[in-house]
Structure formats: structure tokens, C-alpha cells
Image (cartoon, rainbow, N blue to C red; front, side):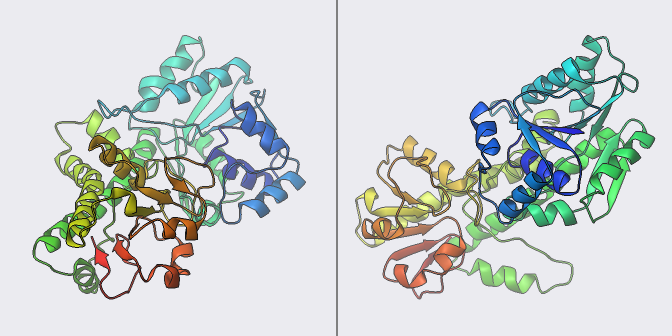
Length: 406
């Protein structure tokens, strides 16, 4: 039996897909309300294909509890935030979960940490916690790191088709854990040491952050000389060794916008390029605010309440708002006492911010300037409803003549 700890965006799909594969699974979370909903067969977030996977897992006997289970195998998938002041990882949730596992686990149990951590975290924090309990790593408990590699909006496919990394002290134990993941993962599974597994995950997301920052810096350069950054990127990407990502209003989510800070926090004197990329991407909401100001001035609009932001999530077709550029933009506006901007997102069903609309047409009726912050399929299929608005299209999805770009 596997006890999956943490039933959020990573832990829940992992628990479900293991159960679908025929593994006995109990999912544990400290959130009583979340566990209660799952036991009532109600999902706690939306994700394509998750409903079907949930039903298949229930048919195979998956259980949910607030209690840690006494067993041989644990997968820990709890949040790993970072301290915004010093940019270092905050390991408290992982430490707490490990200690709770140590309270109940059988001798020789396997602890697999999926949470993304900065390089050296397991050596620095987790081993010491185990040693404080007078337990020996490699005898009383086996410690591994298998960083998650999925993205909201495509979770189920990526669980099955993305390659995985298993970091282990003992490669034989690593191979056994590889056998667990191979029950649902059809891609290559690499077994390596723990520090290499930690670093590889952070490097993956840092690489993408730097690429996006390059696109965003190009956007600012092109804006100063009235050039079309999208056309320039399209042409440049025709070169077989060039792959520039698309610019946007900022970078959100719990991976690309967070993981590079782990390296900046741990290696402040060595991360010049990484820090510059982070600053560029974090500056984009302010750039969007400047573009809104320009459009308002051009059209003589002085009332900020006539501006509407479409999209609250950090990416297309999901309800995940963690570190979203829209929330970052609203923070910048709040700093400048700019209150009253309208907001709508078809995927975010709970009121998250002030002046958030739940009906798209009501939202449109209240605004003159529409700022497309997220390119949901919803807005792509409703272009006829927005064609008469002043549009700032930060995602390059509108082809209307006269629409404004980044």
C-alpha cells in the first residue's frame, strides 16, 4: 500500500493514477474539508480527464484520510513555497510531512519526496530530521527524490508520457521505486543520485524562465521602435537551432516563477543571468500597466473602472491562480491606488478579487478596454462578443485590426 501525502495539484493526480494502475492507495491531507469532499466523490479542482481518472481510482478502491498510514511506501507531494525576502526555499511543509511519516512508518519504509526543492534541501533538512529521531537513513528509512514533472491543463497525459527522474542513495532501492512509477509512466525513467535529481528539476524550469525572459525583453525592445515582436520571433524560429518562446504579461504558476529563485537564494554571487531573467519576467505586469495607461490616454479614458482584465489563472484553460500575472498586475495597481478594474475568468468559479464578474457578457457591458491576460479557449470562441472593444492582447490571439499588443 502507498500513502500519498498532500492531495493538491500534484499529489491527487498521482494518487489517482496509481490507484487506476491497480496499486492500493490511501491519500492523506491535513485539510479536513478537502478530504471530506474527496470522500463524497467531489473533485477539488478542475483538470481535463481528471473526472474519469477519479472514477477509475474510486472503482479500484482508493481511500482518502487525514491520518498518516502505517505502511512501507510514502509519496510526499506537499507545497514548497519560497521566502520572497531572501528567495530561499521554505521547507516547513516537507519537514512536517516527513516527521508525520516517521511517527507511523514501518522499519525500512521508503519515503519518496515529489515536492520540488532546491539543490541540497534533502541533505540539509530532511536527513537531519530523520537523524533527530534516532533513525538511520538506509536502514530504518530509505530516502528518495522523484520530482514531479506535470503541468496543470495537461496533467494526465504528462503523468503517463513525461520522463521521470528517481534520485536515490541506494540505486537498488531506486530501481524498486522505478518499478512503482513504471506502473503508469510510459516514458523513460532515470535513476540517479538525490542531488542530481534535485538540481535537474530546478534547472528545467530555470531554462524556460530564461527563454521567456528573452522573449519579453525582445518585446520591450520592439515596442520602443514599433516593430512586430511576434513576426520577428516567427521568422527567427525558422532557423533549425532557434526556439524562442512567446512573450506574455508575466510568468506565473508554482514552477517557472518560483524554482529559479531557489538558485538565486542559494547561489547569489553566481546567478547573474538567472536573476536578470527573473527581474525581466517579474517586470511584465508593470509593462502591461504602462500599455493600459497609453491606451487610456490615447482614447481619453480616465476611469480605470472601464478597464477589464480577462483571465485570473496563470495559464490557459485551468483554474490555478498561483503567482498569476493578473494577480501581480492587480498588486501593482493597488500600489498606485488604482482601484476598480473589472476581472473575469471562466475557470475561476470562486470570488478571488474585488470586482470579479461571474458572467462574461455582464463583464463586457461594464468595460471599454479589454486586456486579454490569458488565452483561454473560451475567449477564442467568443471573439464576436469582443470585437467592438478596445483590446490589449498580451497573448497574441486577436486578429482584429487596431487591437493593441504588448
